[in-house]
Image (cartoon, rainbow, N blue to C red; front, side):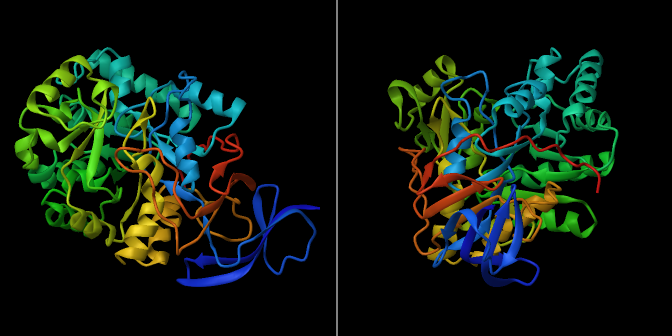
Length: 454
């Protein structure tokens, strides 16, 4: 007897741009047959009136520390409820655990979603003794980082992630030399670029130079938070010009007008409010006795000094420019998810249903087919996931069943972890992980080694 069949499935065919309706027969974690499924199965799901999509692949994600028992995989569970089945974590230059430990934990215990991982440059710097974010690394420190890259290759990371804005002392040359330690072809570099807004074009040019020098593709992180403050035209034009010249550079974006990061980071160094053309009230605190309060100058300075690890939300972006980014075929959806002790930004629980509900159904920025492409087959191609991102025979049975007429995010900035509406089922590896919007199995995810070649 086969494991599962989904009958009356309406699903996208990205090669033709058309919708198909058929049954999906699932066995041993893969889509075994598309057509009329008369076979007996252990379970049948009737998807009549719903959309069946490949599982959403989060191009830009963050992991929770596995050493935190209370919040281990907290973010991944929130993502799972919104249809994410695979996530590329370790972005913005940061890892929270040794890659070896992270992989071992997932292989032993499973996880809510599948994971791929980047190696965080800033984490490597700290481990090598280059803890001063405003200073470049020494030769000895850089050699140690290169050694750590070689050691981590045994666990097949996607490549290097960089957080230049968080560590202003990092030089392009340091990054290029560190990328050289990977040695092989085909790795990908994820970069939170150096400076927002009016500095977007020069920051993008640095990424172009790094790509040309290293030979690796560049995934520019969360273009909305970097450029949707009056500079999206310039940023997109710079990217299009580079791509026209053969540079492998793409971007991701989340569908919100606020970003989130630690208040003690270099993001909030002197001059940031002038650059954003905002004042202290643009900052909302997310934790502690001041939770959900907007800042004054005094509260901002107090929190930055006394609670530097607190995540805060900064309302500095324009939704029209976020929409503009999504219209570009080389910009995919990424959540930049991550909660700090269960607090933070609603993007970790609402990104994908928000795109489907607000940007597709309500505002018609994208068609449903275009949006799903940015959530599935495009990031699958970028991450070289040969058996994910499409509904085809032989592909992994990572699937989302949702109601296109009702799907919407419910998480907001005061309640950032609320589950969405309209997502009925999520399957990971052929097993039902979410049913009726509730997680029923949070252990089906696996670690996915990156296939850097091909």
